[in-house]
Image 1 (cartoon, rainbow, N blue to C red):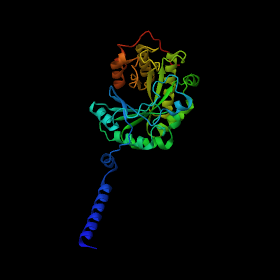
Image 2: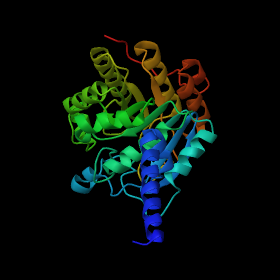
Image 3: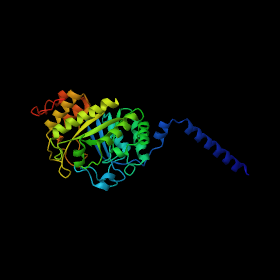
Image 4: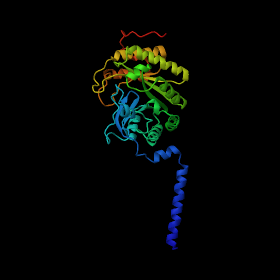
Length: 326
């Protein structure tokens, strides 16, 4: 062996050893920052709503339940968007921080925990990236109950780090018959099981309630009785469950709605005053149309951020008669 080749081999050995030592001494969080993940889904719609950053990602496929059985009858979001649209996930997350958002919501138009829509690597990559952003305090994802499993939810909590991980389920109503009329295809007991898994893993459940859908007989009363049922579950598991009120609007015509902003505001005030639950009012159509409550958006955003019923005084419909607890 020539002196030149010997020196080259020694140099390569030393270089390899130095690189190994460098990786060993890096903390896992730093490794994530130093090794960018280019496989994360693109964000096809970004929207700031109060202190929340809504990030609609483009999943690998459309909602599995919709593909198999047909979409929920009221759903305007289930179809996958064209590939190539949108911005990098990392760019959208940085934008959220720059705009002063403290909450990030990853919206999949389906189920975050369905591997047909979002792979395990993509899930962990997005959550780890958000975990490294100091300003954010909460991260919310959404899923149908059947995809919320013991191992996947615990891995998600680990990846979210110090952020409070919220997992939202479209319960819509606590009435099984009415939910079946909506085409949801899961029972209240499926919801209870999923909520138990979420709470047991250290995450926080969120329940969407549908307001103003024509299949829900006496819709106002149904929303409030459903909120009461979720409150009883919250007391039982000893874990906060946030409610989110979503006004129904036809999938092909986002400008029309059956329920008024004043009615939704009245429901939110009733829930806060009588149940003491955290409740948000949804105002986003995720870029697919104009949300029917958009005209009152600034008022609802202030309420979502502060949870102060007084902020809704300008839009609340005082003629709406709310039921008494009993």
